[in-house]
Amino acid sequence: MLRSRWLAFVLILLISLLQAGCGKKNLSAPANPPDTGGDSKQIVESSPQETPKAINPLTGLADMNTKYVNQRPLAVMVENEYHARPQSGLDKADVVYEIMAEGGITRFLALFLGRDVDEIGPIRSARPYFIDYAMEYDGIYIHYGASPQGYSDLNKLKIDHIDGIYDGVTFWRDRSRKEPHNAYSSTEKILKTSEKRGFLKPVDLQVWNFNGQDAQPRGEILKKFKLTYFSNYSVSYTYDATKMAYERYINDKPHTDRKTGEPIFVKNIIVQYVDARVIDKAGRLEMRTVGSGKAYYISDGFCEELKWEKESRSARTVYTLADGTELTINPGNTWIQIMPQWGKFEKGEKQ
Image (tube, rainbow, N blue to C red):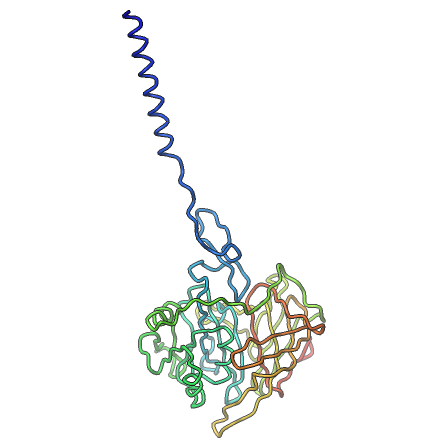
């Protein structure tokens, strides 16, 4: 009898220990991973230690922090007068437009999305035709002043914009440079002001078609070329096979970033011709952004002729090949060289 009671006690004890062990295993089991709710076409898988990345719609590269998905790009007016060089932040821009302004010199419209840039500038005033290209991206337009027609268009077209003339918070002056060539900002400051003003509405950007991997344009070999905008101003590019990108020069000198001192490299270059004319005594220009004309796509050491077409001021510029198919570009940054009809495009070593 005593033996039976002892066996029963041991059996109960073993069962209790087994149940406790199973309970501990359940407590330590890993939870199911959270559902990100993101678009599988945009979100790129990352290891647990890495910040999840998304595909940047302006570059086609999977290097964008997911917090920037569906965010509006920042479209910043950057000066290119001699005293403004070297500029800050152009090397980090996803897309850059270079267009003539008065005085025989160009300005830049630099578009930023998906990365933090702590210094952008010098920032200068708006012109109507730059607004036309900013609208293609539904960009938040950043400028420091404007021409009379520029201000008129900003109001008439209801453009979300931040103007340094009336904003002492988003911009700062670098006293190591003389005014007006010393106004700067950062993506952090611009985004803070944009949030306060209600500019950060979500957008679905579909501007470029990208190749799945690098593809050479179906045209002629082009390792070096020069673009002459005006008698005293030219831009040239030289292909670097190691970087698989073009190094950029202004008046035969490397175009560098002010903070890093490093040269600017460009993956995709579009040369686009538009009609231009002087419209006032100050030498301000009118650019025919709407319509159609000739263009060229340059990447990976090759050049292909295109046709461009833009149906309205806010419409996306469409680039098509000789067979009528729409252009697809290689993943990477893109510079669009908007050339006046008198501009020269010289190819090859003899320039």
